[in-house]
Image (cartoon, rainbow, N blue to C red):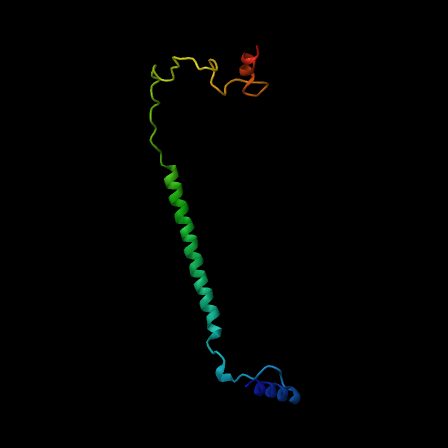
Amino acid sequence: MSSAIVRSGLRSALRGGASTPRVSPASKRSFSASSHHDEAAEASKWEKITYLGIVACSSLAVFILSKSHAHYDEPPAYPYLHIRNKEFPWGPDGLFEVELFGHPMRRLWEKMVF
């Protein structure tokens, strides 16, 4: 089979013919010219659908975000909240509320120095 292809190629080259095989007009697609128009129409349709979707989603987002949400009153400051009855072992401040030149251990070190 491959020798027949080689022989055919050599004959074509010796005759001075084109290196590409000849294609009969019957084997060409006759409807390929109209596909460009159909593809352009399809692309235009989906472009319009996309723009419509963008407008719809943007409108919905603006509507949802512009609606007011419920505002609740602040809870009362009950006197029993945030009460420290017992001192912490490290002093009146929280564990990380002390400073050492900007570092949170300064006063703790001062208490530890004898």
